[in-house]
Length: 430
Ligand code: NAP
Ligand code: HSE
Image (cartoon, rainbow, N blue to C red; front, side, top):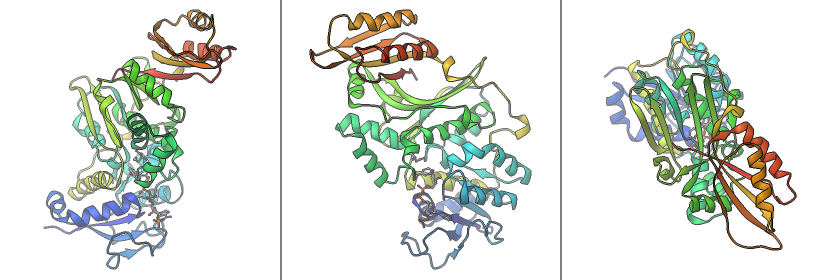
């Protein structure tokens, strides 16, 4: 067998330690598939004394991972520190500039700096692997970039944040409050260091930016995305969704039409019998629609040590074999510049919940606003009585324009009879 591939791991948290353990536990099968052993020889982290469940004595310790990027005894660097700036960015840039391949699970870094990093990798002719950056253990990058390479991709979408899917699932199934479930997700190692990245949709948006770049061979551009999270999803909306035959999921959806490319992350109501509605807990799903293949859906664990390490090691095996593709599926010069479509041009159906005074004439006021905005109702639900308080009124619409809906929403929120900020959730049929 040929010379082992020598790996340096920077960051020994959930991902980094998970990679070291997987390389140790499955060394035989990995060596057979890689054509040579893959061996961790150097590591770095902040706290040298912390017990990681690893035999550290045989490993070289890099006090400063960035300064040791050109270490001649390391063939490939695994960046598992996290963050779009600081040591993670410096390490990846320094390693690529030194002509050495990098594997990273860092979607924030790729979403914000992927264009420049791809150019750097291309300039030095080295691999930049990031299978673990999107949907954890699901081989979504390989599927889009290699498996579906012959297709014009019309749409790529999915449940891209395990923490949010876990929270929404536990709120629905076990009736637990938002804060308690978030705490559980953090304890299980699913959440980002800053959990607002998860619950405000930013982490899913980082991943969608990466998927959109691959699907449409377009330079990654995070600033184009429309992003909403799940903070405002209430138990009432979860119950109403059930009553109407929907489930609430945080989805990322990127589409290409003749007019351009749109990419958005927000809570969605999906019909309860849609395959994606049944993807629960920390599981993620990625759906791609190609002109030749039709619809493909991949489902699996999107976070945690095992799934993420599985994806990182897959990239290491490719590097050991000398296999790699251009970062965004085509050489930088061959990427296209399709126009980005803003959210106000979106069209779709909507769920709208208003907490209104329980008195005559309120429904007439509400429907007058929607009539004036030329928004057609599909259904309306009001149950219960609260003569002295608020009752929920739930409306679903036929397809209409986002701009008209947002204008109507502002008028509805200003009505005397509407007592709280209205809830708006887009209805999607994936
Ligand atoms: P984590 O558990 O917080 O681990 C981060 C590690 O980085 C820690 O070991 C920390 O050291 C180390 N570190 C911090 N600053 C450093 C520096 N300057 N030099 C060297 N090491 C440094 O984070 P994680 O969950 O493993 O996530 C790592 C990356 O993977 C992030 O980009 C994340 O978005 C991504 N990711 C995570 C998951 C997941 O399920 N957790 C899934 C997919 C992708 P100490 O341990 O000594 O404090
Ligand atoms: N915080 C992320 C999630 C980890 O919950 O999906 C995986 O990227």
